[in-house]
Length: 610
Image 1 (cartoon, rainbow, N blue to C red):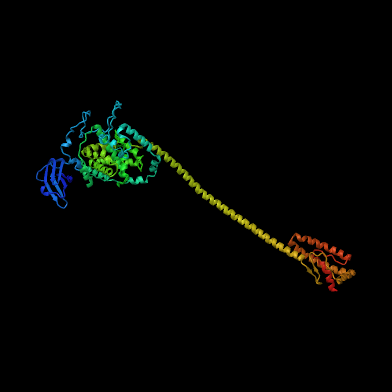
Image 2 (cartoon, rainbow, N blue to C red):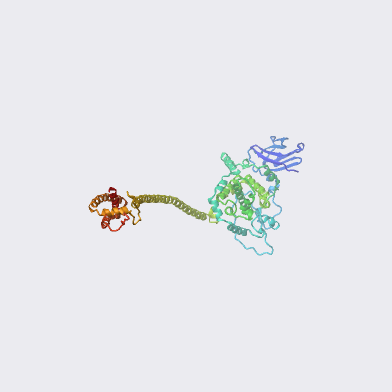
């Protein structure tokens, strides 16, 4: 027989059951309902449900068949109109026979506690009772250590050691007691913690702030539930806010319904393990923004000490501390804000009730089912949680969410001195910012000083160039003046050294010491010396002419400087020497001085006059 796909809904007066039976023989339909029992048969489909409330056959029941869709829609009147049926989404629980819900197990463990707490108990103490450690007596047989959901499994790792080695961090779980698991976990987390990674995510948190903006589906569902609770004093289940997909419904039908024999301590471990798994799942959904990837399986199992270290917690605070430590040690984003976000999301999921918790567990089941070898965690934990949560009363989850909400977690609880580390890093950043600011100021001052230096250098170079220019101009002017003076001196020198040609054709050389006089001129000079009276008169005239020439030369000497001063002295002494020579009248040659003597024109002038 095939179990068909089905879903249930309700209104104040009717319970509606929709059953999909394609290719069924409608002619052989058989339908039965009474109280909490419901049975449906249409070959080859068979469905048997245990309803959460009582229905009655009073003539108002209806049934219809859609041939196109192949679905039966059945409306059953409620025995008490207005009654609210809880757990209509718990398909696995609805498929269980009625007797299996309340019947006790035929086999019980010898030595178990005499009284087992019932599931329907009103109050539950979430702080587990603690007992003093008593060293067990040595036994020739090794003690078995239990793990998994409700600590119901043992010996699994001995058979699947090769596959489970990459799934859990605990080595040899079958031989490791619960207390030692916690000690090893704390040592591994202390060795794994990286202060640099944590500080990098603390200061450069742009990516973290981006993922924190993501809103998963339970945020809107929680707002809707709170709005409904505000409108009506009656607290309804969240079936109107949580919708299961077809794939999720199919998975619920595949689960084998069974009951779990858990004592108070085991149930306490199961509740705390559920919180731990939901925290890891909420972190994964937040950082991946709902788009699961190949790292999703690793994130969920790595952040949950229940899955990774098979740990059994004793209090809600221990669960939060363990989750917080693992968040700042292992994943990509190691930010305390993600711990707070996962904490708040877990509270909302628990407040939404069993349907929301079951939907999250089904998603985790899918993540592990598609990951190799993490699928083994479904057999150890998730499948049992999916079946067990359907039988939990909503008030138990409400009490659990209330206890979780009252629990506080601070950075100082994690044991890594995060607050001191952050404070030290802030001080270092402040010092670096001050040094950077000082460096910027010095850099700003340096270009200004450089510009001033360059300006001063430019001004100095300009002044030096001006000085050099002025010097060069002065040198040029002095050179020009010297040139002028030299040219003037050259002119004067040329005037001094230039050959003088008298009217008789007498040529005087500058370097010539003597010059020849024709026999006739010598005779004339000799004859002139013999005429003293006339010569004296002519000499007097020439003296006046010489005086005028000497005055003209003194004017030129004042322009040429000291060089001509000696010439003036010679001009004064030369007439006397000439007179001496002329008066002596001895010799045939007349000594010619190096300087021009105006008296030399005397003979030629006299001859011309003669």
